[in-house]
Length: 447
Ligand SMILES: Cc1ncc(COP(=O)(O)O)c(C=O)c1O
Image (tube, rainbow, N blue to C red; front, side, top):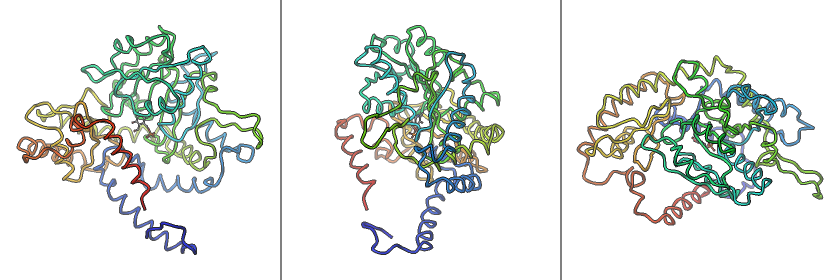
């Protein structure tokens, strides 16, 4: 039932629930097959049923008002502390100390440190601060640059698709406040050369943000499982801030993430206070004002109910699928996997006889939803828990082999994915693409 204005009389609750259950069941059926890349970081219906109970206890509570909900400090303080410990905050010695805040998601956990670095720079007399990021770093860095007036210098990645440290070094100037690296990045799931970036940051006396939104809740467990993961966290002396999403592989509800800082002074830079407002003193640590405590309570509950054992076991299951897919795909000569990924696998063309976009088109026709990549064209398959359904890797590989065969003798028309990715956009003026995307966003509020 579509509602373009408030119903005159409230609707029957059972009726509403019936309608919503039907919608939810239909939409869940799509990702429960495991045929969707990333997007759903679902740790099972039982786990989320439990989180929903926890959410219900605190959904109505405004976590900004800590005098009436001191439990908010318990939840968020412990979420930050557990995340900091997981990312080796204990390697940092006094007077530094890893601290952080809970945010609404990865984007906010990236944007807020940009604000903090800007404020730190201004205090040091730098009026036009700049940050340097590899081309693969998430668009949230561009968003933060736009919101907070920081210049983001994007540097092309090397042939290995990793941050080009020498090229980044060449961009450092007196206005540079921080470097950016990803652990791992969204397009290819690859971990940038963070040790080298860290050394560079230390050498030049600037900050360094590691975007661990993707890897923050996976890489610690992969290390323990014996995968060769280079240091990516606060063990590196140059790392001054990190973003890490509880609402991805942390298996908490959507709407939460953590940003960590190497010291309290840097965290202070993102705080907002007004002391002379008619409504009294106002202070908020993050972008939002009022927030539901339910999200933080459920995030805390997710973390303590899974524990290290739960995260390790889920990581093991995810990697069993990812490893099977990587091994099977390596035997298909016409395509190649970008770099040496862990759980997010990007497929690129290895032959001018195969347009990777045609491969993606075929997979789409078989019910798969991959994430399209451009420059170079490709797509990635990010493995989360829903992909651990039995038989998924085998089914994907069988369809991938068929997809490559299809792409060798494709229908004459250009590939559908190629119309969007893979250079298809290169000939369209950027303003026109922006217009198209904004029209799309308008459409998200259509009734
Ligand atoms: C590497 C990386 N960083 C940041 C983000 C942004 O996270 P969010 O969508 O929660 O804002 C994402 C999202 O996929 C990501 O993959």
